[in-house]
Image (cartoon, rainbow, N blue to C red):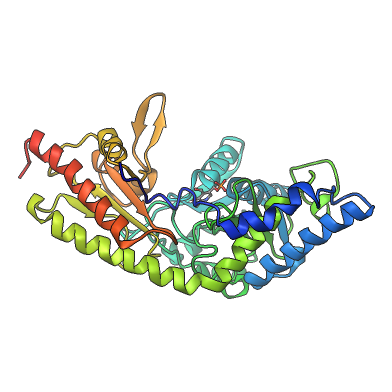
Length: 394
Ligand SMILES: Cc1ncc(COP(=O)(O)O)c(C=O)c1O
């Protein structure tokens, strides 16, 4: 059976050039970067070269990059680290949005349970936060604003620069989760006016288990990995040199081909919309496009089946595609054996059933037009199966 991978926002295959760059750091250049001898120094140099490359890519200073184990740790570090610093000054209010990744959302919920006040901002039906809502939510107690750059379920791009200006006017640290934008669209920390950025390697053809947190020099942040003095005393623990080198190689490749990749996935996205319009015409308007037409990246296309038109079993939808060889995802969380609707799709104003029956297609560097055609044909077959069985609501 043919297998098509359209879940690149979940993770990407590692680029062979990245694997090649990493290999010597498992065997030949294996020293502990904290060791003073030659073996250690060689490993340390590799880390600093990687830090320099990555910093350069986002227009930051190398001293502002802290390597972490990935996006989740970077988000936790930013939220807890800045919140704890705020607490020392008697500030216990955080502003974030309803559509953040769980790494941000759950960190904020934890702080809320432990005495912080958190404002979860709504988004419009296009999935975009209104910067004016951020301004209105600010109080004298606000110690952190965290708004994601690109949403991982629907692909919307948030007005980060405008929010950054507001945060700057009020002297409030501003964090953005850039896990879905980094390496795909330009992320320039100075242009975006951000103080902290989270990023991860495995979304951009790098290895899993490595990411970074950018912290602008001067921003106060408490560390929460205690021990050695790695990462300038901000994150203890022996660094994974192969992963760091692989991350930098992945970034180097993105720097070279970001425009080319962007154009390629744009053509895939365009093709998918055309093909869907074509093959789904016979079903009437049962599909709702959750990704907006503009203010979005082309890497993600998210659809819901309109529950007002047809009852659909969300699990059967995803597994149906899987059985036909098409790997996609939906934002629904499986808790205690039952599916919970995606908080992002709910935030767009969709009802629970529609929010459950969601499919996210996410494109990557190596997908082809053929992959898209195959996926849409299988998608139409799965839906047709439901249409055949269910009574179509009119
Ligand atoms: C927006 C966003 N933030 C954070 C993460 C977590 O990153 P990681 O898998 O590197 O921990 C993800 C992963 O899907 C994401 O999409």
